[in-house]
Picture (spheres, rainbow, N blue to C red):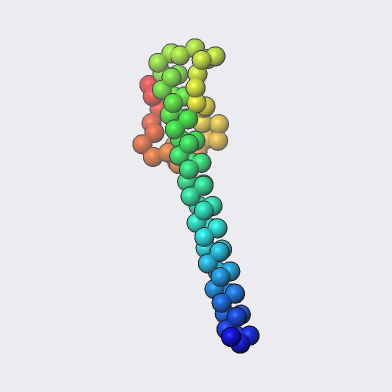
Length: 77
């Protein structure tokens, strides 16, 4: 193999690795958003049922993004 061929192979390998890493980051971000939404929904439901504060699970929408990032989540009232 000549130097040009090795360079092309190296560049293709680098591009492939970057694409794989980018996809892994995207999937991790999606899982994080889903977990956040699930915890907010759990918290909201327990608050609506009157669960005492010290026994609440999940968390409030402390990022103030649930309305935008959690489709289908509506305040439990």
